[in-house]
Length: 302
Image (cartoon, rainbow, N blue to C red):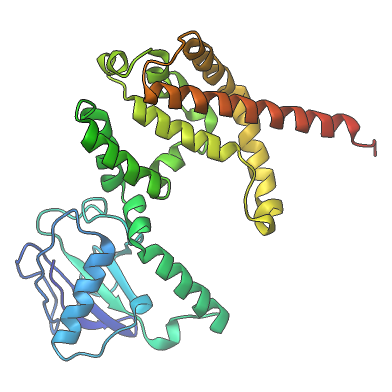
């Protein structure tokens, strides 16, 4: 990826082209050829461009002042790419991509006062944490999940990949897929829990550990928020999600638990984990359902 600096909307602009090739730039633009793998993140691209600018004796721009744009003619008219953990492939950049870097003036950065800038800085540090970068990258997380799915016989490799998955924040892409319980294909997601052993599940093209990862997400969505300050704000949305889960997801989960409970003892540790999480989901869902019904029946009439 390469770039060129020029005036754009009151700030600087950098256009770019990749794999060591000079990027296109319109008159007066400085082209900065860079070479990055398509698995590199947008944050790494931004950092590399910043390093090149400083290396050429140009002023060091503020990280928050740098907008990476896709499309346009180097005049700042492209669409802004967001998400520091997204890979270049996720951003739609091909073999020889062309992007523009727009450097906003200081007056346009941190609008809203010192409090805004401080909070933006905190959010920036959180987004730049390695764990956040990995979990925000669909390619990285799907790669890990694919590894635990396809390399089941290599237990040592799978154990290390699974341990890493458990240390990372929930995959943002998969969390988004679970946002609407009515749209989830519950039988397909729970298919591995219907098989008594991991090998049997694999024969059906399913992954027990991917199913276990899915169950961890469901269980987390059913738990009350840990942040008491956000409880009131998130309460309505959480209640709506639980209600939709009871309508669309509870019956498949309970059916999967009943099927696994019939196999005693569990075939292996993964099967035991699946059964324990299915039971936990059933208990939490039923407890929440009973509490909500009790509150509705004891609420005084208006």
